[in-house]
Each structure stands twice: as structure tokens, then as C-alpha cells.
Length: 213
Image: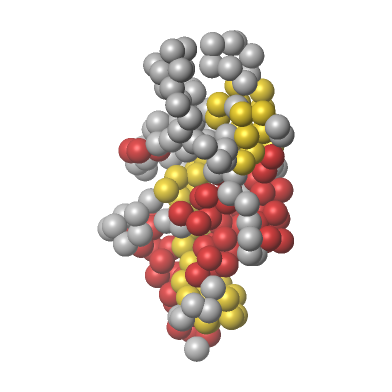
């Protein structure tokens, strides 16, 4: 990634997703140096040349990765035992068209569901609004939080440093919101893959649109 005018190494988890704490990501300027720095994720941007020619020193380098509490490639209900798991989805009848969101929050024995109609919108807006709503519903932001979404668009903007070309105000609002969490993780899930809570979030989003119609 690029931070200011420097190329840096970004710490990732087992699913190659950036590590995020208090809205910041962990970087190194050089892999072979011990110094690490937490910087705002919004200040990072992909470098134009992500695959520079390998030199003698860099040829054997691997992505900078640190161990994490949960493996995002195999997140299970057991893995959520000590975290608030937030499942989010957006729905849109047409693009743009009537839009709605669905959110399922689980923490130990507690479950909360949110289904809300947004009015006219796009699929991307619905996905972002679902994430924002889920984050706002978390009261204790000192606890670890795992957000599940099937939106590559949302994940790119919120975890990979993509520059927002549309929905700029909404994206910046969510980025500021992520900074209020002590330990926040985003997990990419496959849509309509049979996961109970993912499917439930989808139904809640669709129901919001259908009931408004």
C-alpha cells in the first residue's frame, strides 16, 4: 500500500484482510525491521504497481501477516463466542430502486434483528447502510466485533483503501464510525450460500422493500 509518499507493508489476517483496531491499520516501512505503526485506514491507498520486479532481497518476501483471535476463513458460531457478530445485507428492487437493509446481531445468548426501508437507492448504498446500521447498533464498542458482508464494494472501501467515487459522504461516515471500535474485523461471505444468519439478513432486507411496496 501507499502511505503519504511511501510504499508500506500492510498487516493482514489469514483471509488477506487488513487488521483494523480503533479505525487504524498496522503497517511496516520495511519487513526486516521491527518497527510497526498504526495509521488511519483512510490514509492508505493501493500502489499503482502492486507487483514490482523482485530483487534479490525481496524475492522471498511474503505479505506482512500477524496472528489474530479468529481465523476469518472458518468463522463459526463458536468463533463468535467472545465477539459480537454482525451479519449485514442490502436489497434493492431495481438498481436504483426501492432499497432496504437487513441486520442480525448476535452476542452470546442475545440476538437483535433490524429490517428497515431506505426509500430509493442503489445496491451499493443498501450494502453500506446495512453495515452502518449494524455498527451503530453495537453499544459496547470495547468488545471485539466481526462484521459479515457479501459486498466486495463495501469491503474495498472500508478495508482496502479504495477511493470512494460515489456515496462519498456515507463512506466517510462509516470510516469515522469504525474508528470508535477497539477491535473491529470485516469478513467477506458468499451471498446466498446457506449460512443461517446471512440468509436471515437477506430476508430482512427483502422484507423491508416488500412491505414498503
